[in-house]
Every structure is written in C-alpha cells, then in structure tokens.
Length: 234
Image 1 (tube, rainbow, N blue to C red):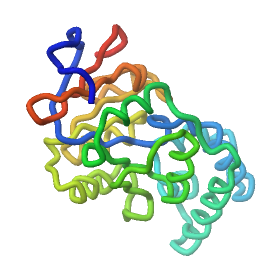
Image 2: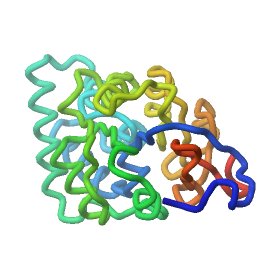
Image 3: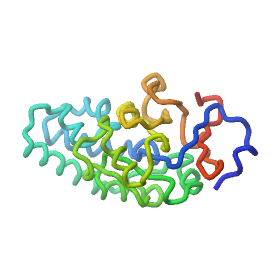
Image 4: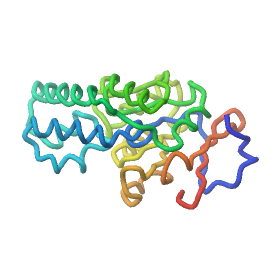
C-alpha cells in the first residue's frame, strides 16, 4: 500500500471508498489496435463500412456495438455476429499492452479492493490482462455476466453485489462516455482518463485525468483514499 495520505503533496481531487471498479480496454490496457483490427475484420465480413468502427466501439459491449451498426438484426443473427467478432479478437496475437501506471495502481490494492468491469468476453479479458502483465482480479464482470452492456449499469451493479459493497463505497475508473454513464446510473462516482476520448466528452465524470499514472491510492482510516495529482487532473 502507498504512503499515508497525510505524507503526500496535496492532490487536486480525492475521494474515499472501499473498492475501485476498473474498466479494462483503454483504462488498464491499451488494446486499441487489437480492438480495431478485430472489428474491422468483422465489418468486412458483415458488410458494414469499416470507417464507422473507430467512433462506436470504445466503451460498448459487442452486442451494443453490433446493434448500433446493424439495428435490424434478429436475436439469432446478433448471437452469430457476437460469436464471430469474439473469435476474431480472442485469436489476435498481440491483444494488449499495459497502460502507464496500471501495474503500480494494482500493486497498491489488495484483492478485495478492486474489480474489473468490462464489455469484452472473459477469455478476451484474461488474455488482455495477461498480455499487459496484470493479474486477473477475483471479481471480473464481463460481457457474459450481463444482459445489457455499458452504458447500462448492470455490470457495475453486479460487481457491487459480488464485492458486497454499496455504490457509495466505490469509485469507477473509465475511459469512455458509455462507461461513465454506466457508473453514474449505478450511483458510483467516477474518474475518467483521457486515453481514448477528449476531455470534453468525459465531463460527466467526477474528475478527469490524463492517465492512471496520475492516480494514487492511500490507506485512510481503514478505507482507500483515491487521489489525483498533477496539473492535468480536475
């Protein structure tokens, strides 16, 4: 665990919680290249213009992305599309790289103090965490665990239930507007990182910072104090 909160320079923002709920893609790991490769391969197969992919895939589940691009597909067709894109991405030879500050942040947390809430599959999440040199958390909520992905709050609500904490005892870390919307709908405070989206699109978060390397966690009376440092936080 990091130094006592009182020993650190004054942060530009801080919040107390019991657990951190972390998004995966674009937050803990940089999987942007693999995500785009997979979705563009799927788009060519599905007959969707590939140039639409970059603006819609980040922060959405596979089902939400497909329904956004192909709103008239049947339930059976949706399932086939999901399986196709998951197979493509799970076979990617270079699934992810760690985001700056990710390893240090996780090292400062004990297993009950963090979880991952992601819109990708469990196999894909495990592969991307491993590729980023990060452990798989004891609570990992993936696309298979929910009926509706972000911006629906179901994933975050499920994580809270599995961790046994209330929404007020959690802080989410997200990189995309859909994830911030999901956290807010679940009643969870959020910190946004500007790794995939401009600051202007992340203003619904409680605080915005450039990356995980500006986030520190401290012991504070048996709870976590999440503190943001640097001129880019706020």
